[in-house]
Image (cartoon, rainbow, N blue to C red; front, side, top):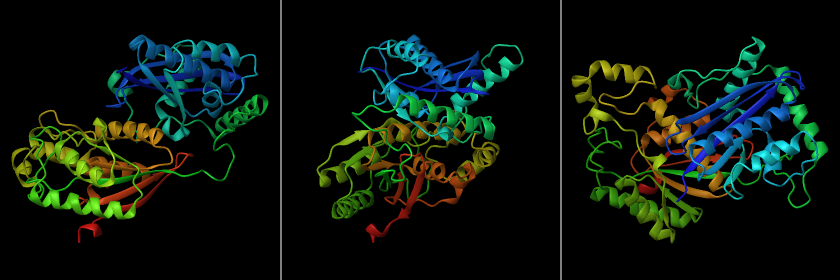
Amino acid sequence: MARELIVEADGGSRGNPGPAGYGAVVLDPASGEALAEAAEFIGTATNNVAEYKGLLAGLRAAHALDPEAAVHVRMDSKLVVEQMSGRWKIKHPDMKPLAAAAAAVFPPGRVTYEWIPRSRNKHADRLANEAMDAGKRGKQWEPRDSRAALAGPADAAPARSAAARAADAAAEAAEAAESGPSAAAPPVGWGAPDLGVPATFVLLRHGETALTPEKRFSGSGGTDPELSAAGRRQAEATAAALAARGTVQAVVSSPLRRCQETAGTIAARLGLDVRVEDGLRETDFGAWEGLTFAEVRERHPDDLDAWLRSAKAAPTGGGESFAAVARRVAVTRDKLIARYAGRTVLLVTHVTPIKTLVRLALGAPPESLFRMELSAASLSAVAYYADGNASVRLLNDTSHLR
């Protein structure tokens, strides 16, 4: 199976045409890790030229990492996404050679394209602005320290001015009007009030294990416990409730045993297969695995205090921070939204991934993770629309267990 890579790219022009630059990042789809970055000040150019140059740089960076990879490109330029997907014609003479160069980096069929709102393209947007800022000072962009460059999904990126954003939108609208969509497929969501059927994630926390009633830390770095007898009953009750509703069209599970057992019970009842997604695994709690909160407080008080204060602090012994989990979950969310567009999918996962998906949908701060309750075998739900907005529809419902 070909390795998967994600490319996020952006470009901007301060003046349109004016001083311009691009940014691109190659991401690992499972971990969200930034594998490569590229950015450059390109002198005076239009916004659309900068966007295309960002795409080209991102694809070349991905090719340098793995020329056999399957690449999924995410950009906030509807123009570039629609043209490279073949749904809009390319008429502008400056666009044609850039589009041809981008199409030639990988063989046909190995690159897919997805439009995302600017709010979900912060990493590439930051790189593009850094390149333009460097150009303003008469210098070329230089990469930051690799650790500082890994911005999480909640991290702020330098924002363009309102005038610059308006110029970007006007430029894309003008180029879109000139190019026009092809007759074969009208552009989806371009100025239409109807955003269509959302991708809906029904989020199920797995059933109980022996560790659940004792409230012990149980993540991806522990013993990988199986469901208890109570957990198996919870899975059966959930399966019956979801079968009665008849809305779930696919089942995706964390790779951990308790989730796969829960998912398997439900999928068998619904007549569906289970797809395993590594990005849905629980946090690795390091040396805290199997301990109660009181035991961690006694043995690792300073590390626990730091963990409670900051999403960037990791559990003792090489555990995973909430910030790292958020990066991983955000990448997984985006991949699943693209795969299950317009469908209702059951995600069988854990406390931290579910709380993270809800937090990101609400735009809530990391500390909100400590203010949500998620019972074993509880159901939550988030809907994701074509314009990038999300709607939390349910949280911690256990009525099907009563």
